[in-house]
Image (cartoon, rainbow, N blue to C red; front, side, top):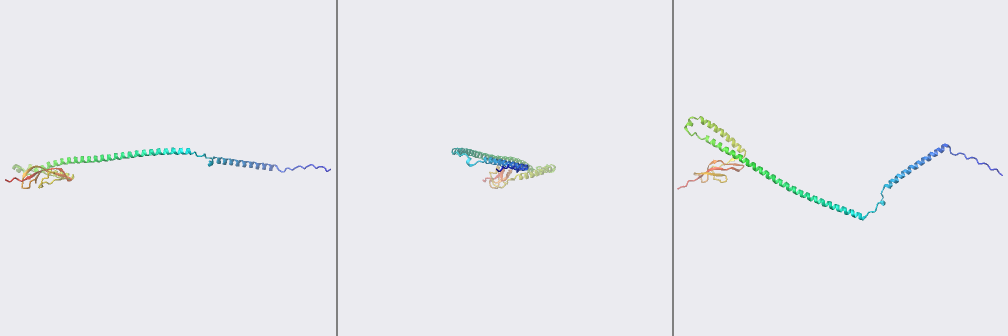
Length: 244
């Protein structure tokens, strides 16, 4: 009988360095798997946050119709409020236009009243100037008459003084006529014309060879301003003597 041989010992195939390297590689693989798993969880979470059409709740037709009715009522209410506001604005615009027209009429009336008052004041002022002119004209006319007595002719001193005063009055009268002309005042020419009741007042009549009603002379001169009568003329007219 052949004797059995004892088994030979198995030699150690991995060294200590190989074991350590394998452990490191295995650890690195586990770390990589952990990172991949974490990335998959994040992707899953992100995917879980999305809403898919299949997850949406079904539309309730009654609720939709109710909401449409509410919107329709709100739209009708807003339209009514807008119409009321528009009517109020139109009414306000009408009142404002009427108020503006009243103010315009009142302004025009105030302007007319102011213009009339100004014309009246100017008229009174010019009539006062014409009265002053009449007085100056009377003084100038009196100074132009010859001395009434022989004594005045013998002693001409007072006569020269009167002539000097008359010259001053004449210059004042001339200046006054220029002032009146600046206010568009012109004298009326009536001597030799037929009587015109609208611009003449007859103070007396005298027998003359002229036709009846012819103006012989002026007692008070009449004047126009801008073609309108400012002061009526007072005149003496002619009347033919009755033949027997």
